[in-house]
Structure formats: structure tokens, C-alpha cells
Length: 421
Image 1 (cartoon, rainbow, N blue to C red):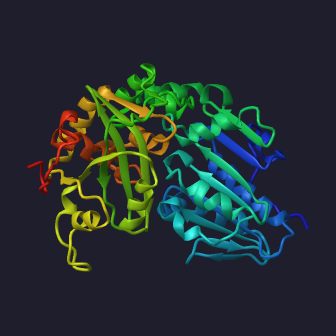
Image 2 (image 1 turned 180 degrees about the vertical axis):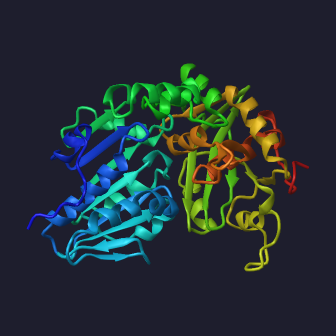
Image 3 (image 1 turned 90 degrees about the horizontal axis):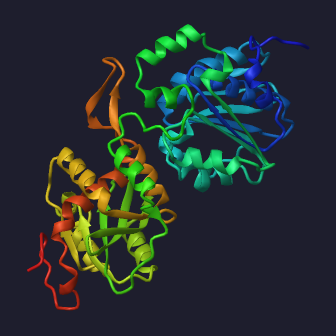
């Protein structure tokens, strides 16, 4: 039986559909049709799959985006198939052969733990928490030998770029970059009109697939770019004779992020980064204890000071009971004062490129929220996976002056909640 699903592949996507590699990275300009192509790729794979209980997944940065962007296409292109079941309740379709395709959001990627997949598409991977792939999605493909596709438009030099770079020259990978100036999918007059409404960086990113263009609305893009040029994102050695301080953002339901840094003269050497979610404070204490550093001061946010109803003690008190006695509360401050403090501090910072990779990726993408109706940026940061690492670094910048000078270390110090007595 031959059934038309109403899809005709654009020639630019033909190599993608004909690939034989297990992994693929597809970078494409806006309105190129990458989401449609990948939805159809999932449908084709599900129809051809002869495994029992086959499962395929489309993952967007958020569940709402998955529904808004892909659900209509998935329903439209599977509707002509006999025996198909389309389930609005969980955004899934079940084909006649029992294969299932379901939409997910990476904003709650932990719910994918324990599942298995025969194939996964990650749309706008650069907007996802970089832990979603290695910790959850990749293991879910293992026992079924499933395949994975990363697609999106660049959002700066982040983990999506790392995938693109890693795929170069690797026979296990298919990769393709579709630039608006090369695909011919949009007429020249339309591209010229689009260029009028965008900055050069915006056009380079959105239409020419540039990973080097500044992320639109990013708070620290310029400062971090200058650090890259100055080679201040590199291998930063730990200085054993200097205490290592930490700056925390304590998430409730979200991730907790911790920056580890040293004050060496005028330099701030950021040597490590720790984060997790859904674990107790003891996990973080043990994670830090496993490192060989000589610990100094823990800078905690203001919400670490109130006592919690569950335990009757504050987070600060709990940490002290777990063996981290030298903690200080960073006073409450205006978020934009903190952002400006970070901007002032960054030129003095050196980051360990490997140990701080995820934290740096968050700082690069920490940006203002976009008002889709008014077509302007809102006066507040976007709350996504970047927020907690960026907030922790803000506490670092605002709490730096609370930390005692290096020449006072080795002497007995008495800590109060807000400073050294």
C-alpha cells in the first residue's frame, strides 16, 4: 500500500534523510524547515522499525515549545496512516506497528530517566541544559542501539557548538550547515528585508548560522568574548597555598550551582564548578570534600539565612553542621546591581575551560527575556537552566568584598552571618 503523507523533502535536506550514520548534527537558518524534516525523519524511522515496542522522541527546550512547534506537524503527517492513534493527553502517536513517537521538554528532562528510545531528535539543542544529553538521553539509547539528532540555530559558542565541532571528520556522524545565503530557500528580496530589522550579529546568528556572533540579549557576551581573546579561558591551575572560596545559588526544585575560585592578587581564578538538582545538601558537601582544595569562605544567598520549617534550621546552619563552618550571607541586592558587578569583575577573572565548561556555557547564554507580543526585551532575565549558575556568579561578585584578605589566613577567624568578627 502506498500512502502519501503530504511531505516532499526539500533538496537541501535530502542528504540528511539519506544518511546512514548513527549520530547527526544539523545547523540551519530560521525557516529552513528543519523541524518538519526531523519530524518526518522520526515518522519514517518509526514506520520502518521492526523492534517490539519501538519508541521515538522529539525533545524541545520546553514542553510548551514541543507542543507549539512540532505537535501540529506530527499530527498532520501521521493522520493519513491507517490505524494511527493520536493522543493529545501526552503528545504522542502510536502507529499500526506499535511504534510510538512522543514529544518531550528538556526543561524536565529527569522524567526521561528509566525510559528507552530507538531514536531521538533534540530541537534547538543550544537552549537545553547540557546535562540532558549525557546524563539522561544518551543512556536511554544504549540498550536499543538508538540514534540521535541534534538540530538548531546557533546561540553562541556553547554546548551545541561543541557537538558541531566534535562531529567534524568523525565517520560516526553526519553533519550539515544550511546558511540562508547558500540554501536558496528564501528569496534574496526577503533576506534583504530581514537584514533591515536585525543587527549584524543577529543576522549572522539567525540566518548565516554563525556560532561566533554574540547571543542576542546576552548580559555578558562582550566581556566573555574579550576573555576568550585574551586567553583567560584556559587551563587554570589550582594554587595549593591559597584558599578556595565558593559562591552558591541554592535551588529549591531547581539546580544548585557552586563556583569555586581563588583570590590571587588582583586576579580571580575560577577553577571549578559544581551543580546538580534533586539532591540534598550533603551531596554537595561530599562533592566538594572529594576535591583536594584548602577551603575558605562559602558565599551564600540571602535565602540561606531563614530557618526552614522542615528542619528548624537554616541552610547556613545545616552546612555548618555538615562541616563547612566558614559561610557568609551575601546581602540582598538589586539583580541589575549584581549584573553590573559581574560585568565589572569579569575582566579580572580567569576560568578553567574544562572544569568550568557548563558554568561558562550558562554565563554565555544568560540573557534578557524576550517579549514576543511587543517585540522587545523585557527588563528581567530569562529564567531557564542558565539562571542558577549566573545567579551564583552574581553572589560571587557581590560577596567578594566580604572575604578576608589572603594575609589573614592561618589566623583564627570568627565568622558571623555577615562578616568576619
